[in-house]
Image (cartoon, rainbow, N blue to C red; front, side):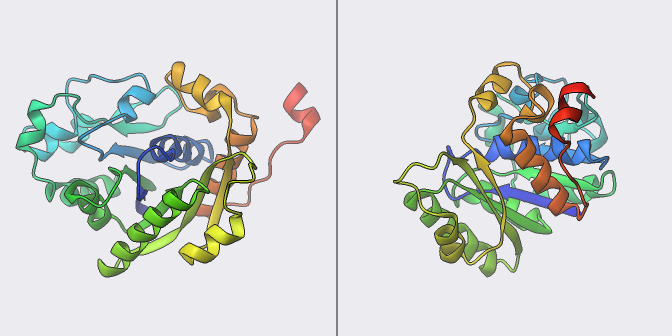
Length: 247
């Protein structure tokens, strides 16, 4: 429990999708969760949950214009989010170092605070890493994505941050993909879970909700629930076929 930054070496690997579904899955397992859109340059958490523009956002809090409690919004599922501003003008006023203070305040309000980090290794991403108690790395099973993820792992080590493990997303089983064992060996990290390529994820994005809410029994939704249970140290078993159908 604590502050977990979900990060990646490069964009397009499913980092934000993983953050919102991991948070929603933890909430499904009766954990109090707050998801923070720490990707200030290209924020998407609010968009994913149908709240792209809100009266008070993370930028206001980091700028000293609002209290952190005023920037928390609750989804119908009970999952809470702190969206960032879509305004480009507000980016110039942001002091990234303030994120650490915001995260500490949120830590006392939930079992898990998930920071959706910016991709890459710039100042914005570094601030998310520094604010974390531990990290979760997201990557695709492709050599370029894994190589960039390795850079993030090395940076985390330099900053003295624990990396909980890696989530491998968009796995389709194509022959050009790296094997799960090769990804694990290259990153030298535990594999927290494997999320298959799933068109239902795109469908859930169109509906502005998490896949575990929209399509709770798809392979991707079940994978995220399993990962969440592992992170929360909960013994969770997927419901059987007949229970899914009738109950």
